[in-house]
Length: 311
Image (cartoon, rainbow, N blue to C red):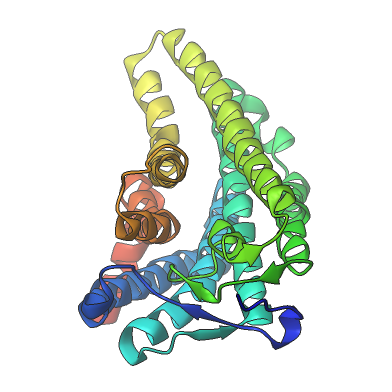
């Protein structure tokens, strides 16, 4: 058995989607369209928030931070994925692999933390509307953004560091990107600390963040039930509807992906890999559409820009 060490000189080989290697060229088409939609949609919202003073409220600033996290995650994943699908370029240096892992998993943690901050924003908007600007100041939004960034760095940085201590018996990763657990399975020797830490991060991020989001949603619903006016109830629900849909789009594919790893032993390998890609890309592609549909300010501004461009 060959044993590889010194990660600085290692090169991994990404298999792509196991069992569907002959379809990689065709699969590149939906992934290319999805990447284009992510770049255009997220870029457009970022441009609006940056250039329009009316979009400098806490809600839109948090939305802009979410768009930045989505773009970074996409740029960390798609270039290598498309090179693999289009040009069969499978090799990736170990340090590049660990760097990709850090940015992909790190932005996932940041995205989850920002969704918690946006749930808090909805709670204040519905339950404390008169104190909204006092509670959610621009400085607090900045601190929430830094806290989300710190959470992503602190939780994910140990993953590549723990991997660098390992020796590797296999170099072909049955995946389209350097997923943490996929790389851990390539190692020989004592990998239990890596597995335990990976499980700890999943439980902490998904468990705690979903609990906080669920708690804020419960308080919002409790407040909405007490409203006597139908118009006020509709306005309150509309305020949080976009965030509710984005939370579903973000966590449902992630939960399915995690469940297939934990209990889906009979799930085909290509289904594992496709789900792992979808839970990263689908929220980034759908978030701008959801916010564009549910937030009339964004919808009206985009329509105005399109009419001005066609004039």
